Image 1 (spheres, rainbow, N blue to C red):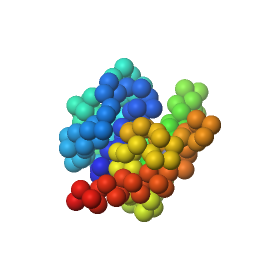
Image 2: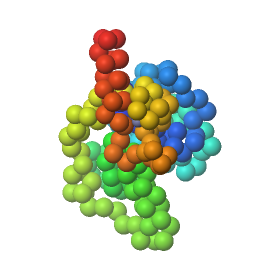
Image 3: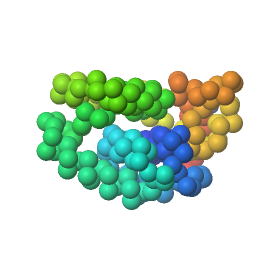
Image 4: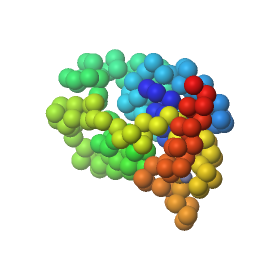
Length: 181
Ligand SMILES: [Zn+2]
C-alpha cells in the first residue's frame, strides 16, 4: 500500500480509538513498516482487530495479515479476499465503516452469506480517482476544517465528511510532497 493508503488505515484505527499514538510521523513510520503489504489485506485485518483488541500495533496488523492470507488461501478461490471484507470501497473510509457495521449486524442476526467469487473479485483493480491518489491527504492538518493529522475531514456540523478529505487538504499534502521530492 502507498502512504495515502497507510493514512487511510490509520484513520480507520483512529476512528475505532485503538491507536495509542498518532502524530505527524505516525503515517511515515507505519508506511515504512507495512508498506509492503496489500492495502485491502491491511484494512481487513484492522477491521478484525478493532473488534477484539483495545490497542492495535504495527506487529498486530502484520501478524493478522499473515493469518488472514493463510486462512483465505484454504477457504476461497481468488486473490486472497475473504467474504469478511466489507462490501464497500476501502478508500472511502466512512462508507467502509458503515458497511462494516451493517455486516456485523447481518452476521449477528444470521443473515450473512458468503458473497459469490465474482462479486469478491469485481472490486480488485478498480481505479481510484486522482483526488484520492494524492499523497497523504491526511498527513497534513486540513487548511479548511482544521482537522488534525491522521483524522478524516469534518463538516461544519462536526460530522465526518463522507466525500473524503477537502480538496484544499489534498492539494496542501501534494504540494508538501512535491516540495520534499
Ligand atoms: Zn478538511
